[in-house]
View (cartoon, rainbow, N blue to C red):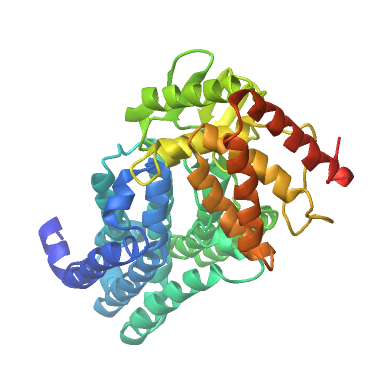
Length: 458
């Protein structure tokens, strides 16, 4: 049968308007329900992250559609007696020719949203970005084999729609199922990628081998050989498939929820200057403001120094996007700040950069509780926050500082307005002192805050 005749008779073609319509509709409905188009293209943009987000909604649908269509085509082969009509042709060759349009349909279900997302964001289709797509394409072929075999043993009018629905819901259900390894072997990776990250090979290899081993064991049943030989191969294939599935399940059982192996630090950065050298992610959405960001950092540190605040100019300031999920703590020499997030189109701009520099550079001669709730005493808060607010006023970052404290006070104190009013009163009164006395007030306020928090003093 030539290609035109095969396409004209396959169920993949005459059902195409249905599943293509669903893909297009759900792409715009699901992927832009929480993230509007304007926010998506504003960045940060990382191709592997965008591809994995797009595929998350379509893995189960692709496998379900493929299995259902393959069941129908497998049942048609049996009903039409194709195996017997062409005894000289290999069963595998017949299956490949029959399943090729079905597999193509599954590939379109996965490839279409990926293509639309990459066009939408203007990102290049790198190999690391397409790795989750290649996983899905491989598993589509495996589900086609499984479905074709099911079509040989069940009535296709009933089993085709039921198998499509069952496969879809089984894949979806594993994302909420226990034990956790089910999530990682389903073929729909539930590990979200952060900026600069990509899946390690094992994360994709485990679900691939888990499903392909089943498909390979099923395909052995079509082996053209004597019955005794067939039985031996079928038994060996079944045992091998069970062993592979057990190894995959054991490997994935050591992974946490949404925590398959990933590697970070793959995003490219643009850097400018020395001491400090400031680096932003190339596709973070703010690289065009790199020079302005560096100037703002230098200006903020300089103003604090001129106010006699003991701060150190760092050697390097790096965009926290470049660290991935493994956030790195800042040191005196190397700061990690959310530069792209703050300076990008969806950020607050340079005032947010100044605020981050303030929080990173201004240090106390002691340490404090990580949160108000964990503190045994809150006597230190007014003095600590008054000193910080004064420094924030120096660098024109008092608005974000007050906004942040206002939110924290409201969730921790019964009288948040009174506490905030006291902090503002002390800080703004100090700001009205003669310039030569303000630094002395700041250091005294720091010392008093440390005395009131003796349990965490160093």
